[in-house]
Picture (tube, rainbow, N blue to C red):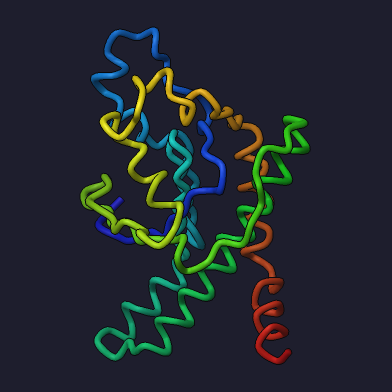
Length: 202
C-alpha cells in the first residue's frame, strides 16, 4: 500500500485480534511490540480499507473522505476538517457496534463495554511503504493507555502475568469477518448519510 493515512481507535476493552501472543515461544517477549502491532486482519476495496492489529487497534480508511482532502488541497479549512472527523466517527461507531454484535452472535460472548467513540478516542495513523510510519498519542482518552500497552516496559509485572494481558479475550477471525461484511453493506448504502442529516436537523 502506498503512503496514506488511516483513522484508528481502540475498543473500550482490550482484546486479541484473531490469536494471542504465544508466550511459550522464547522470542515472544523479545518481539513483544512487533507482535502486538502485527496486522492480523485486513480488508480493502475501492470504498474502504480496514485493518486490525493483534493488540486490538482498528484502523479505517474511507477513500471518499481522504480523496476530498486531496482534491481540496490547501483550501481545507477548519469547518471541512470537523465535518470529515464527524463522518469518520459515524463509520467507526458503526463498525464498533457491528463488531460487538458479531462477537455476541458467533462467539456467544458479550465482551465489549460498548460506548460512543468520540474525537478524543481516535487518532491518525500514517503508512509509509506499507508499514505504520507513526501516529499521535490520544492523551485525553483511555486510548493512550492501550497505545502504550504495545511496549512491554510499561507493564508493572512481567507482561505475560500482567492483568492487562491476562484478561484479554481473543476475538475470532470469523467474528471480525462477519462484522466487516456487515460494515461493507452499511458503507454502500445511504444509511449513514441519512442519519447524519437527521442528527443535524434535530
